[in-house]
Image (cartoon, rainbow, N blue to C red):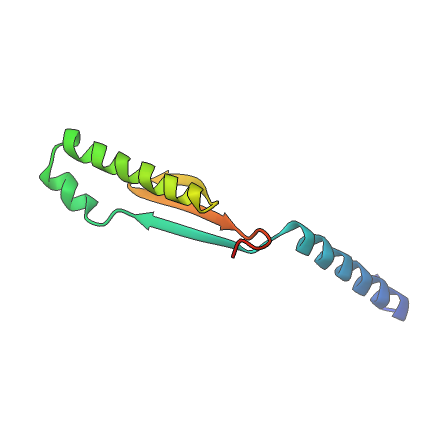
Length: 92
């Protein structure tokens, strides 16, 4: 593309449109990881019949709290919860 006044103005307009497009379709996002402290030690001391229900209760509790705060659980990673909270008008 030849560098000319018209092309520079056209490119600037395109960039402006792209910025507006991205701004309309994106919002601030908080990403959080919640991990159960001491779970490795618990797994070493106790049998699966003891530690697995404990970890599952933790995951369910964290999920409930995330949802109450209008967040969304993305993934469970072992004893960790990956959740996101998007910014809706007036929510932060």
